Amino acid sequence: ETYRVAIMGATGAVGTELLDLLAERNFPVEELVLLASPRSVGRELTFKGQSIKVQDINQIDFSDIDLVLASAGGSVSKEWAPKAAAAGAIVVDNSSAFRMDPTVPLIVPEVNPEAVLEHKGIIANPNCTTILMGVALWPLHQYQPIERVVVSTYQSASGAGARAMEEVKQQAQAILRDEKPVTEAFPYPLAFNLFPHNSPLDDRGYCQEEMKMVNETRKIFGVSDLRLSATCVRVPVLRAHSEAINIEFQQPLAVAKALELLHAAPGIKVVEDWDANYFPMPMEASGQDDVLVGRVRTDLSHKCGLELWLSGDQIRKGAALNAVQIAELLVKKQLLKSKTVA
Ligand code: 2RA
Image (cartoon, rainbow, N blue to C red; front, side, top):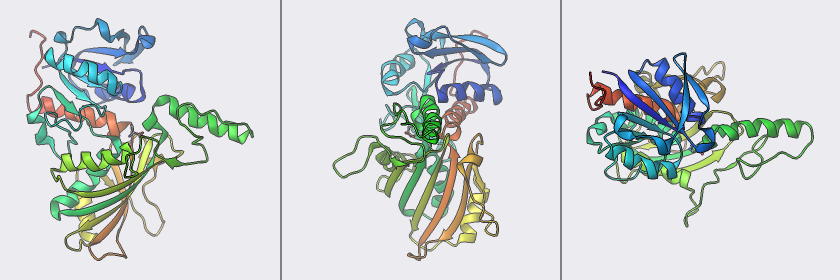
């Protein structure tokens, strides 16, 4: 069977990665429809050697679409995902609009693939930081329930979009010329700098990005009271996030056992050479499907504690790849129906 697939936000950093991944992974596309904001209408993108014009979302009849991959921001998803689902399409939404909706499965295919069976038309893609952490923690949690997590993130500019990636490069050039850097995509200069994630803060002093890691991980793991505290930081890196994760278990977990579990787990590449002091780096994680995990060590301050470090491509596994893997799961479980008459 082949499917009529629409990409919402086709010209963004995640949108273009979705298009590339559908081709690279040979997803069974009958026809690809590209949707973006009015200012991008008419632009042409290439899919499998074929040039496709970006269309205005207002002109689309979703009753002709089987699958929508949405990455155009929360307001566009809020308006259009329910309409597309009502017209019979299945929507995999990368925005945060529906992630905590109890009728919407929130899925990391390596963690909770079975949740696709519960979809009511919309499936939510978790936040990038949540996906990368979930892939790494799940194999450990399955072996030995996790009591508590403390995570610090080192988030790339790509999390704020393609323009932000350009801006940090321009800022670096400006600073090297002793000029004042332009700050539009970020509130402060990011080049040669870093700052706590600038999403809105709550009354406990946590920002939305940090609470996404808490609430989304609880939903994906099915552990509503999982104890998790996050500090999210934006760093001058282009497209891969890194995370320092401290994990507390009910019983001590030996490093050798943890490494055995991580080596065997899907979506993970263990990267550690202690003699060479070589561990996951964002520069190496960029462009890869796997989450790179390393520097696994016992927490010297807690006998049931374990520390690990990871780097993962924020645009790929952190967004577009996870969404395409959910779409592949829908096909595999015969949940995606083609409206194209055979
Ligand atoms: C960020 N995770 O990195 C958020 C949105 N992609 O800012």
